[in-house]
Amino acid sequence: MLTFRESVHHLLLNGEMTILDELNDTYVLLDSESTQQLVAAIIGASESLPSIAIDLIADGVLERSAHHQFISTVASHDIGVGNYEWRLSSFFRNARAKLPLTTRALFLLLIIKLQIRIYGFHDCLSRMRRKKRWIQKRATARQRLDSDFAERAAKAFEIAARLVPFRTECLEFSAALFHLLLSRGLLPSFVIGIQRYDFLAHAWVELDDKVIGDAWFLPERLPAIVRI
Image 1: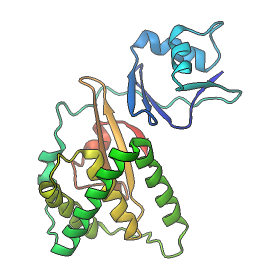
Image 2 (image 1 turned 135 degrees about the vertical axis):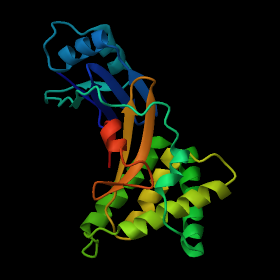
Image 3 (image 1 turned 60 degrees about the vertical axis):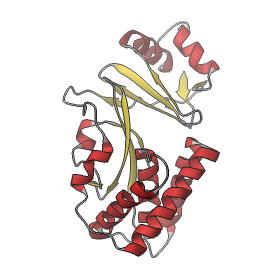
Image 4 (image 1 turned 30 degrees about the vertical axis):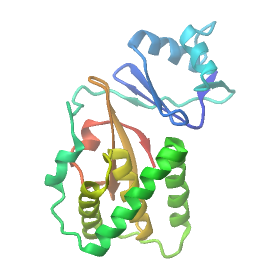
């Protein structure tokens, strides 16, 4: 049998596999035929390895294992957001942000941008996982919903994104917001959802199953391939 490596995420969406190689920050999109071959190889139902499995092993995406690989599957045709542009979602950020919070947001946005540029996508996600685990272990971690602060934080990042001398992507925006909410003692979720046609990957943040600073319908329209 075969399993995906620890840093690899996958989603079987309507019979087609999408794979995210976190280490290399690359997506692999398989058609239905290649997906069927790969799934058969993963569950040990094929007598010989298909070429797609051999290629993915060579690329470090798959590895041989005695353990069973759970296949994350979504079957729904009521999905997708078209040509979604996250910057236009300021309509959903109606809170006000004061200068100290905006200044902190600006600083965090710069730090996250620098970290991703120097250390890469995998390091960015690893830092988020470690920080959330640390917050979860703290006795003072807040379990209550603090949506008012979360919305103000999202507004602060929206303002900060206009001030930085570079294009701010949804990954940077969401990672910075995630870190700020954790620092508050909250336990947000960082999510990357995908759309197959036309392909789109989008990151956002949720708190208590509510999208913060972005479109409320994202969890329903973009199945998650990553959740921290």
